[in-house]
Length: 469
Ligand code: SF4
Image (cartoon, rainbow, N blue to C red):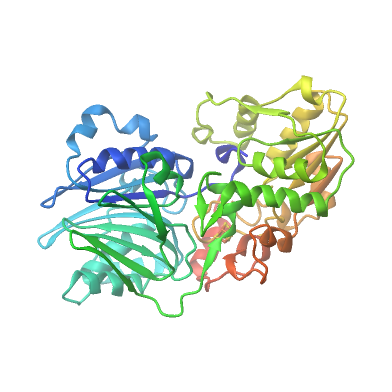
């Protein structure tokens, strides 16, 4: 499904380089590979060992980093960010990396995730005299580092990180160090690679492939990795860290050519489609997937059932970004512009339409309608994840609980609303098993499906997620 039209959006991707003369250029390519994680703003900060310098703006990687601007970014270390704004809102000031200068040196931050105790920390910090430059939750870390009473930078950072709750993959760069931190649940993906003598970190491994970097390992929950000219040092800032990787990274967000915790995303999605074939066998003529993220699951479903996979829906890649259109009605028109049903494939056919998830239901209804208008005699919708009944507090914009169609409607009711001939969701057990996990759901966050979240939830966060919009 297309991120912008679905109402289910990732909040950012990060990329960093240490020890390469073309650090900014490598970061450009890395961010380009991570563009699906956020299209509203992007930035790069470089270090030449003496000063930090940055370029950022609202727009796509290819729009912001012109040749002139790239020429300014000289240095052998860099961090970069692509942003999708939810908590804290949009605006130039919220585009990352955030850059801070002080008497004791400079600091740049790039964050993927969402802090669930940001509001209470901000209140405390403001009461102590901090003045925030942005409305983003990410900035809290810089103030906590600055106010830490420890003498050494690494201790300041570890102390500050230990106060944060929620999801965070942080890149923190000073003139002479790159620090990489992952929250104690490891909710967001973050991996390490090398390119010759240089170290590279990225939200997804697909960003390593485009620059020819060699994957080393994933950053561990509660780990602070410190990279400088002496090499790598790993420290643990959180005890009792337990892995709870976001399941939606596999279902929908990450690129199919990325590997998360050793599992290839395309393969995981294909396995979800195969499990669906067992849980929802349907007598049909063709299987089609909603581009792009549902294609892998559709291939798996077709392979397991023997029903031919066909390209029944195509995406027009050259339509402008839908997020600039503010209303639901206009978003729905965006669906029509972006997706087309292939009449020659679906006319007179019983179609299985595979999609990765249903959020509000409006997009699914529109796509079922497209297929029927193109002559499909039956449209059976199969979803390669369980119903999303709960909001996400960790940086995925899933909409509020009230907006989620599955929060208060049965599968039969949803089926009727979207106009399908049948509707089946993958079971939670099936989804987890598709990742090769045989010991239950340990290791994954399933909060938006089950309502069981891997961290405590703060009252101010609850209020935000249930009332906004
Ligand atoms: S609640 Fe859902 S979207 Fe949010 S981190 Fe957990 S699995 Fe991912």
